[in-house]
Amino acid sequence: MATVYETVIGLEVHVELATETKMFCGCPTAFGAPPNTQVCPVCLGLPGSLPVPNARAIAYALKAALALECEIDPECRWDRKNYHYPDLPKGYQITQYARPLARSGHLRFSITETNGDTVDREVRIRRLHMEEDTGKSTHEGLPGTSTGVDLNRAGVPLIEIVSEPDIRTPEEARVYLQALRTLLLYTGVSDVKMEEGSLRCDANVSVRPVGEDTLGVLVEIKNMNSFRSVQRALEFEVNRQVDLLQSGGRIVRETRHWDDRREITFSSRSKEEAHDYRYFPEPDLGPCDLTPAFVEQTRQSLPELPTAKCQRYISLGLSGYDASVLAMDPPLASFFDAMLRAGGAPRESAALLTVELLGRLNATGIAIHDPACRVTPSALAELQKLVADGTINGKIAKEVLDEMVQTGATARTVVENRGLRQVSDEGAILEAVRSVLTANPVEVADYRDGKEKLFGFLVGQVMKATRGKANPALVNAVLRRELQGRSE
Ligand code: ADP
Ligand code: ZN
Ligand code: MG
Figure (tube, helix red, strand yellow):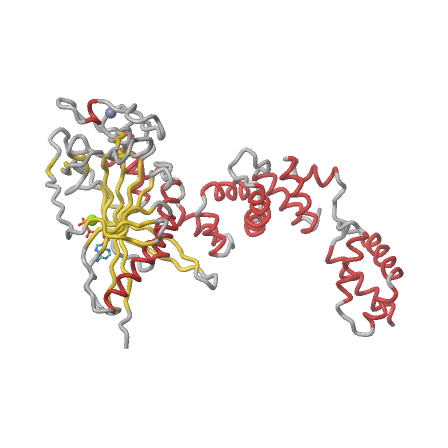
């Protein structure tokens, strides 16, 4: 019988912190400036220059570590990681090795299964440390095979977040990464854009026979530039490893690159990780000194985070799926929270927001937090309340929303200006029902002969006669009574 394999994945994620200036100097960090215009003796590593830690970067890193429920080392240290590369003019990178800022955290998230159920997952965070970014090699606009170096990125503050090998499928790896991105968006410490490189992920993956305790030989994958490519690269790599083992081969520990166009990984450093960075303590920097008061104050400054938000929405009656869709999208969640503050009923507000409003916005390519979105949370909550108190019916609500999206008018204004109030006056409805019955003698006769489906047709005619405004429950009741009355 063929051996069944289990997949084991651990992710190493680099995140650029959204500070104005670099980690150890005052150079700006703005993305997209002409090459080598945001550099100084410190980030170029010129002799005699001295690094000065950026207090805001440390505060941001601490905030991220606390959001990930890590244990903090208030006396964390800086180390030099030594290697030679053109984008690293100093010949070393300042990082944290033996004494990282934080350890032993957790990231919680939920995965939606194909049957629509959500499953809660928790991945342990091994460590979170601070470091500085390297420069970038470029080929753009250069002759032949020559390579340019842009050092604008050298010295930009980073955090590296290393997970334990707790992830079990490529899909879970993608969802972990998306949940991490959402969590960091909530903390506001980074803009976490994979396309611009402010969120970068390396994946470590191995397989082992199910039931085996020791981990398989790991392969590290680099060069994945989107959430989708992380999942695709891991899927490819898992298949490659299982095929290799099943055909009697053996996995070599190596780094492989993902080729997004060909959708394969290929070996890039064949030597079995011969790295020796010769880490040693950074002599120009002392240990950090994070006071308990500062750590506590930072903890208090955290906003409500996705897991707590999701739980709160579920406790208000939302499904696990709806709760997580809202909580995983900060602008959407803040819109929803504002609807709740304006008195919207939770379940109905969630439906109006995620189905009706988002549906209309998506069709025109407008985002919920875009100024072009002319519907405010309180206006949408008001629409929900007009349905709840019977002022309009659910069908008319959709028409009202169409106009709100287009003109920015409030729900009440649209209802009054266009005379869309629901007709709940029984006399008026009775009149409409009677004229419909008189006008459709054939259908009425067929209905009495057992063609039950014609009831729906007759309801439709009454709604049409009242231009959609009749209270549907009342129409049903009156119509049924009238049909019975006439048949007796
Ligand atoms: P280091 O880079 O400090 O030597 P490792 O390479 O062991 O540490 O771990 C780096 C990442 O690889 C971590 O995210 C870890 O969870 C993951 N990892 C370690 N061993 C395996 C394995 N056998 N299979 C998959 N992932 C692994
Ligand atoms: Zn500088
Ligand atoms: Mg490693």
